[in-house]
Length: 303
Image 1 (cartoon, helix red, strand yellow):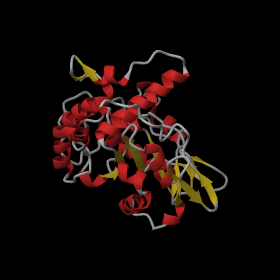
Image 2 (image 1 turned 90 degrees about the horizontal axis):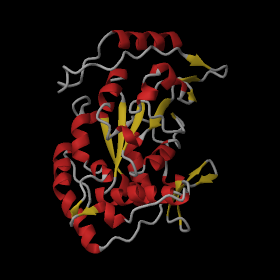
Image 3 (image 1 turned 120 degrees about the vertical axis):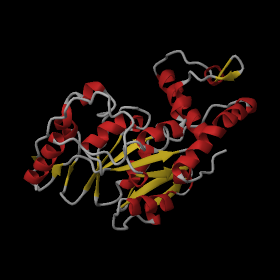
Image 4 (image 1 turned 135 degrees about the vertical axis):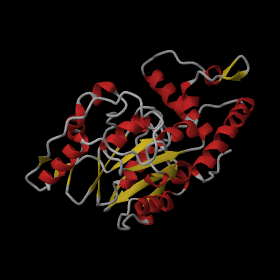
């Protein structure tokens, strides 16, 4: 099995992969060739495998909840940390051997998954992942873009607060000279159609499953059943795997009698935003949301 995996990876690297559809930047200089990783096995029969599934984003969309819920399935082995292989040059230059070393040990019949939310908004990532494996399964979890912006700000706010660093009030970063501040990076991350267009240059739409992050918060079980079907996994995740924690205000997990919740940094209350500014945000995202719905052929219950 290890020899076969090594051979397939070596062949994929020596032979340029064929894009699933015409690629707009075919004339661009390709990234450095990725070295073929050696197979690393363990005496108990497990081995480290390149991921067959990647959760590509989006930041503050619910990626940690998604990978924890997916880990309930016995056929899935999840990397615990965000790897940032395809978006950080310092990691990408280390090659596939390093990437493989970041993966969990798994049995040959298990699927390996990693999640790095920054992948979705990085323009260079889709091509790099396609070069590694054009048949990979991609999971994208999205929330109402306005809610995602507020969560983005909240995370940065608490990080700066804990480090005793200066922070800007949310109104000052959202609005500049009476208009939405287009220089605020969190707004760009919520322009979903812009980033999705880039992914669809390299992957067919049926390779990317969009998880409704707002529904995952409200009722995780139906969303996870859709994920199981997309990944062609034997149904295992049940409604009994989830229970609502009234103290935390969100669903936690129950697995073989063991209960666990996400870190306390999850589910933090958003700062108060003046209704007039919220209305500006809703209006700002109206047209981008419409373009995204048309692009993916699906609508979401976003304000």
